Amino acid sequence: MERSVPPPAAGTEAADPPAALDRLLHAGLARYTMGLSPASLWLAYADWALHLLASPAKQQQLAQKGLRKAIRFANHVVSHVVSAGGNAAGEPCIEPLPQDSRFKSEAWNKPPFCFFQQWFLLNQQWWHNATTGIGGVSPHHEQVVNFMGRQALDTVSPVNFIGANPDVLQATLAEGGQNLIRGAMNFWADWERESGGKPPIGAEKFRPGEAVAVTPGVVVYRNRLIELIQYKPTTAEVQAEPVLFVPAWIMKYYILDLSPGNSLVKYLVDRGHTVFMISWRNPDAEDRDLGFDDYLRLGVLEALKAIQAIVPGEQVDAVGYCLGGTLLSIAAAWLAEQGSEALNSVTLFAAQTDFTEAGELTLFIDDSQLSFLEDVMWEQGYLDSKQMAGTFQLLRSNDLIGSRIVQEYLLGRRAPMNDLMAWNADGTRLPYRMHSEYLRRLFLNNDLFEGRYRVEGGEPISLGDIRAPLFVVATEKDHVAPWRSVYKINLLEDVDTTFVLTSGGHNAGIVSEPGHQGRSYRISHRPAGAQYASPDSWRDAAKVEQGSWWPEWAGWLARQSRGRAAPPPLGAKDKGYPVLEAAPGSYVLQS
Image (cartoon, rainbow, N blue to C red):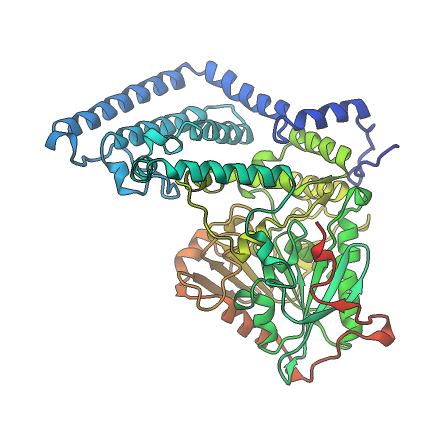
């Protein structure tokens, strides 16, 4: 069967599609390369190696740095040997990077473990010098080589070895090796579940509709791509404008409706908002030809149509999270182009509109890598959640791989499952065409931000056409949507904008309910027409506030409202939107 390929960009001539044999070969090879293109990696390595070979001064500099580091290390060892019989902690010759928590234990400052740590960190620094600052190497190739070098070096970190890790060695001696037995059992259990396609241990306690996604509501609309959930009111009056959540379809919607204590949906409902939620269907191979325009039309636009029938005469406060926020920004710009005033306000959670500085995810974005990935998706019809998870684990290998190896397999300590961890394991698939368009048009070409993005072949849309007030949230430790990248929407939007930078990462920074310990945020308001401030200048000027940012957003939504009214009915049967079933619906339960 002849399978479709994504359409060419407007104004370009269609090229012949790749041969099926080539695609099958690449898809088969991807099973052994974690989906990474060997050609892309070799091009980066060749660019680096050839330019280094042609740079004798850089080679001399690296040799001198290596010698100096060896002398510093020797002095460090000697300082320990001659002080208090080698037991006192001397001055380290290098400190771990601020984000590196592997060596935070005090035991790493005592010999012989401090020697292992210092030697590793000096090597890490030397390899950083060796893979950066070489004239002629493209910035992308430099980043790839530097990243892959760090990954290779991390495999031989002393943290990973029983005899070189003081915490593991101490636990092994104290427990007579029982920690290693537990760790082996943990590894076997994880391997058995992974190979059998089962969720991780404990995730079964957080099934949607039972322990999570339990805010009362009903499904009022369904098509081949979405279910639209309307939540039941808990107050006698509600804000006149309904709220529509557009979550990412990379994961399931209930990140926004976890347990009752940390559900953003429940938080809004209890404060008098009529809340609607898009629940995306988990696509399969038959949905391979669903494109980005289908997600716009069948998702956001159909949801808005249903809401306008259920709550007639009212504008909508639209909220987009991650990729859902990117889609919402496209919808808002397209609606503005059409002269529609359907949106009362737009809120974006950890959502990018410019992709030139999209963090380390761009390491996997070039023509060679995308062509390779497209061949994988062409064979399957989709990108599987496990393949996506592997990419994110590489980006945070110290946190997601290294720490797990030490804690669960060497120390034998398994952290109890919680609702956020269970949600994170409940992955989805991405249709071939949609994901290809997303990566090429947005990540690789940056069409949206640069004014070349077309909806269904029409005129290019402009984010500058959006006139609804904006509330934009970014998170400090976001590896998916770095906060400086999210902040770039300020370059285009000459509208009333409130920007929040909250502590935490891509998920935990958003799920930041009041009362959550250790949370903080910065917030500022920029009226339409006000002067632009650079991200670093903005951060330096914005005061740090303690606690959750949710009350700030709730207050902002209230200020955008025209007032309160009686709650609307659940659904509108006479208009074609009957109550279909109770929330959370059926799409969220699809595996």
